[in-house]
Length: 237
Ligand SMILES: Nc1ncnc2c1ncn2[C@@H]1O[C@H](COP(=O)(O)OP(=O)(O)OP(=O)(O)O)[C@@H](O)[C@H]1O
Ligand SMILES: [Mg+2]
Image 1 (cartoon, helix red, strand yellow):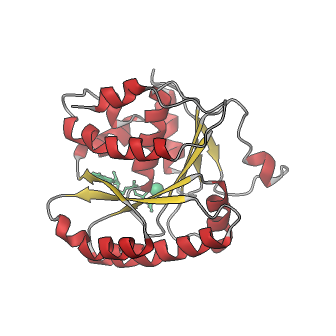
Image 2 (cartoon, protein in one colour; image 1 turned 180 degrees about the vertical axis):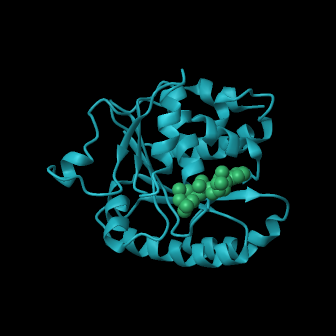
Image 3 (cartoon, helix red, strand yellow; image 1 turned 45 degrees about the horizontal axis):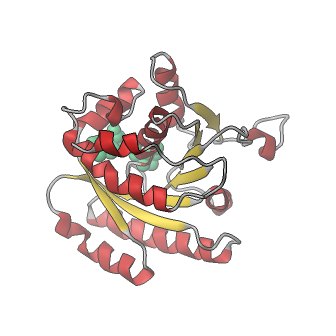
């Protein structure tokens, strides 16, 4: 099993968009997938409800946003034994206890950052805090990767963030363009790789570095199949 945490304390950075696309990418690759929604706004929950009305491969949703009455937290968040991938959609501005709970579950952490100086500044502070929590935890080798999201033109804006990440030895994985296809996909309960490949060639090509990076951080066990190669091939324009 691999657990991918998609997180940034800054609101609107693309956590739900990336988490839902990642979950559907796994599910479309025949991997049994859980999407865990820690956000009380329930955006992933809503996305999956729409998805359930379609023929797209199913994803199990776990609502982790609030404690369920009458069951322990461990029971509430229990991942069935047959699950191969877990994607966690984090809320903006969470408390330290919740942050630690999510980090403790993660094998790998993806931080989307939008190219505005306000977002980059806030994200840099958050990444530093995240690094401190990881270093203080038992699983202090959890990898963090950054995804530049909603990029329109000027990647130079990310230069200060790149310097900061270099200092912390955190990789910049890929850039996702600002595209209406992402907005449409969320509305329809699908991922962009479930759309017509011709329509989303650029978007698909930008996922390849992330898919490869996640594969290199896979927890190897007999129950953790590789992501099928067909996924990589399917996403090459
Ligand atoms: N690459 C993209 N291209 C175009 N629109 C995008 C992209 N990524 C996200 N968006 C849009 O930006 C808005 C915020 O995205 P999203 O809800 O995924 O962010 P979030 O980090 O989950 O927000 P919150 O902190 O409120 O949970 C949404 O309207 C979404 O459709
Ligand atoms: Mg969200």
